[in-house]
Image (cartoon, rainbow, N blue to C red; front, side, top):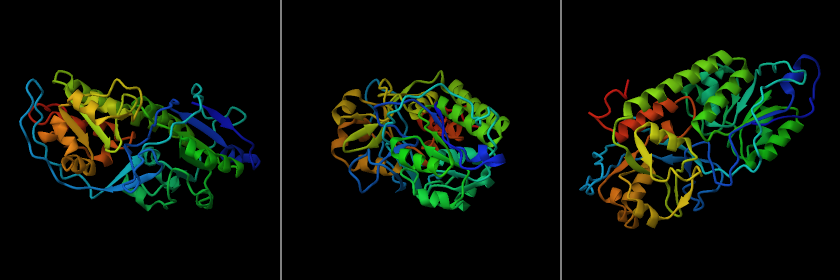
Length: 372
């Protein structure tokens, strides 16, 4: 994590509040990464294009077919009622090219804790969720158009996209802290905010452990460190409970569908792959270091996953594609529709996301002890 400071634009008590400050969490990679569930704009054929999109949900389900010999059978799945009609998804982000430095506490120039911000603009849905969990939602004066949780966040003014944001709209909200998603696409906005004398935090969460660090950084920045510890401990306890409950269950080998043409999936560098492990599954591409690697359909066929995890739109695409019927899991109807609103953000609902995945991979009666 890197801390960088620029010149303050005011003096006196407000100096620490307006001093430009960057905190980066996560590690650089040449692979495409995303803070959210990797997805692409429906009208754009390039899954690495930038931005966040809302995708239409559907409730179609597949027809269960014969299991392959020797494979763990996956019971027929019907979409749960909690899928919402509008799902907020994110694109595969561009890789950050800067090295990360050791974590450093937030502090003002004199070594004192920075004054707690009173007007925060959060340009990442994950950090918006964190701020409300910290009890400082009333201080949030701007968000992205994709922030939908908690419900109270919808009342916060919508400032547009989180990637390449409208800096003029952000400054019009008169923030004393802007939280950005750490990506090369946001460097220009970051520098312009510094020039205007506004502090920034740039956070990128690829792994579950990054969430814990980001939560504590936000707790320090907002004067809610004790609350941040409680939230992290609660999420960690739920993840551990799910892991213990699924430890003795057979590992369901899964392929996580991200995009069709070209084929993108979830790799071992993503928190989503970690959630699969915790929920009693095994990601067939978990050995790849990238968070969202590009693979081939032929290789998916060769790996023969027991089941496929997909969003509602992706699941429909798989069912309707003759090419994807070369994958046994598609032919047999072993397509499990994930609640992308829940699993799509590495934030305060990570524990709930693990419970949701465990319920998909190990339906009753084998999931006993997983659900509350």
